[in-house]
Amino acid sequence: MKLEEAKKTRIIKNALLSLLLYALPLVLMFVTFYFTGQRPWEKKKHKAAQSTEKTKSENP
Image (cartoon, rainbow, N blue to C red; front, side, top):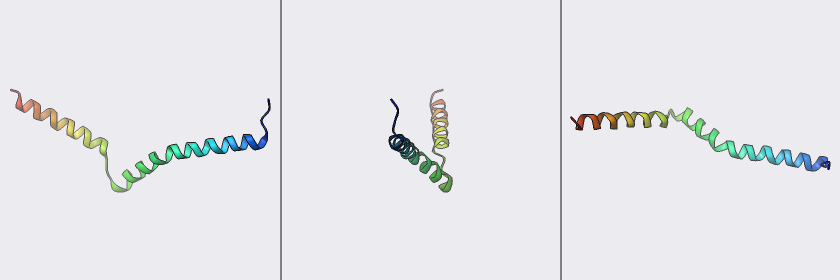
């Protein structure tokens, strides 16, 4: 069964729109990190290292 050209175009257009809507929040998040200088993944590592050091100092 062969697709009509109009249906094929509509399917492609909808697929690209879906990909854009999926990727948009991720792109905006990284753009925000770039302009604000925030690095939440580094803070998490830093907090984990602090809690490990705190636990070590409490237990002799």
